[in-house]
Length: 292
Image (cartoon, rainbow, N blue to C red):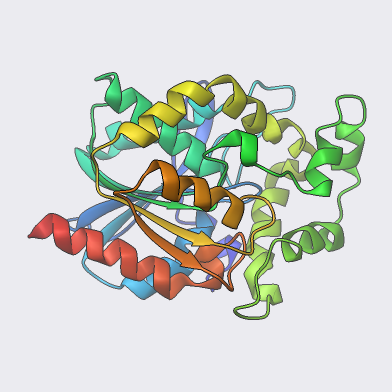
């Protein structure tokens, strides 16, 4: 897997919401664009194993959301899903993007839902041609925060908890959400840790959990955008995820009967890392369908 240092060296900066945001434009400049929306507590690097599986002929666009990866991480900043969606739109404007497939995971699912809601409002300039969703709290009442996240959400002690997070504790937190398809190794999580630790980002982990509150506040709007879309929609879902696993996708199956749903019974929270071949296959199929 590409190291965080190598990945971040590819970043190009855009300004959004007064912050410098790291964006990535990788692959065939004339190829079909795929925009990746990453999760918490991670970065755009998560897509790299999938991208290697897809191969040549398409173009990857990605953002490290405000507070994540190589983007600015100011303290006492009001981070929000809306600001993350603004950063994606700013990247598209800078790249001259007119259409794209969206691929979203975890935190990025909420960003994707906000972008879908803007599309439904007629306020999205870019044509979204299809979507791939991976484990995230698309129905916030079913989201089950980890023990570590619950501690970080404590309004009185969350900052202290974040300050005390070591690499060992961080890795164990990831391990608790991993499935059984294959063993998690250091290469799987080094980049996640390094991207989060970049610019002292670990100390912001409690502030970046704002998305849990954002999901509750905008639940009706985001749910409507997801359930009413006519776009080709695929869910690649790890059933073993304790946070947003089988209990989440079962409601998706009920509410979105026309969606393609690929359930992975031996995968946890990280289909991108645990089953990159499956994710790549689904993205490639959508790209082929768009060309036909």
